[in-house]
Amino acid sequence: MRQRAEGWQGWWRDGRTCYTADMATNAIHIDLVDMAEHARQHLESGKDESMDEVMQDAVRALDRERAAFEEMPRRKVQEALDDPRPPIPIDEAFAELDRRIAARRAR
Image 1 (cartoon, helix red, strand yellow):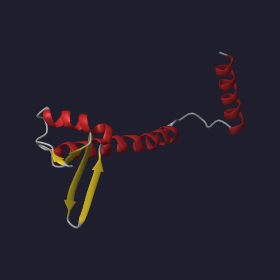
Image 2 (image 1 turned 90 degrees about the vertical axis):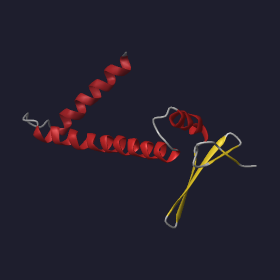
Image 3 (image 1 turned 45 degrees about the vertical axis):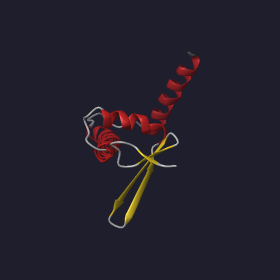
Image 4 (image 1 turned 180 degrees about the vertical axis):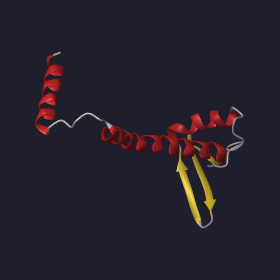
């Protein structure tokens, strides 16, 4: 039996939260499972007025996290390209890596 959770835009069922929203002709179903209580705490804190806002904040945070993660390799490559030191021959680079690996294993 499904019960509507007070203040939620979805359904609370058997300890699991199912969130359903219609977006034009597409329906989205999110099964929060372990995150249900955490999401509910965000809603009950008063910082968000609806589960829609909680989910929007979560997606925005995920977008920021992914953008930062994707930017890191670009930044590292640019730093390497901007480095004024002469390049290291590949044989020397791998020899140095082998030395570092051996030193770590010896610890």
